[in-house]
Image 1 (spheres, rainbow, N blue to C red):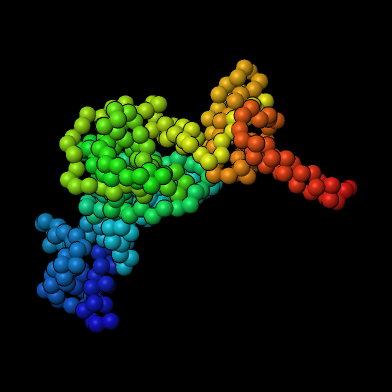
Image 2 (cartoon, rainbow, N blue to C red):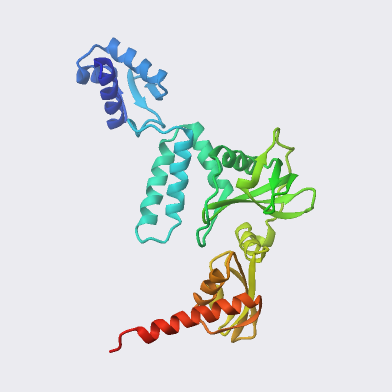
Length: 325
């Protein structure tokens, strides 16, 4: 490392360590003249570090956006780290949520205004829906940022959308909220052409430019966009579907079901109906048995009953072979 580069890092360290330092103090610590300090400050500014001159004291102060060097983050990295910390802050691991929240607040304080705007835009436009992880589909941070910015500005989005069956259609939507569900991103938006709320998988969206005009925000569907998406994911057309009668109150079962796992309908005080859908019968069997309650099959393909019998036989065989005493 050259003497100049080493001196710049030392100067940056001194500015970080002290809220305000005079040119003479910095020169003395670095063993150079005040003129050299002024030149080095200009070099730091050219590199993007906000070093401010303090009026009346001939001193310098390091502004926001430079409190973490030599760790440097580009736009995408800063957004990714911030979103990761936010998700950790919303988690359920004891101690981790509080730590992540503190780190998130510190990071936001030192982000330059441009990056802070991007992060705050994403935070304001996104929510999280818990549940079992699905196979991830790649979504670029640029796409998420464009959608989040449209949510914040209340501007219509124009995009091509590829359905589950592969059909493509041109859509115009009034974006309301980006929601991270498992390892997928969804957009809840008012579909202008269909005059109704819709949920779109972001990885199936191809954004068009320019964006549409501004719009007046509407009340969210079902009173909450996350609740709406959960119901959408539970009631969409799955390859395997079934309705079960569960012999416990709806409130108790509803507390055990992850969002998007199923729709619970009260049926008296002691039972409820649970509609479920999944990619396979084995997944359906796992979902209903994970509720840890007595149940009966109300409707479903014969394959669902066969899968239940197969699972029961495996469990019975395991119980017979288990050691006793």
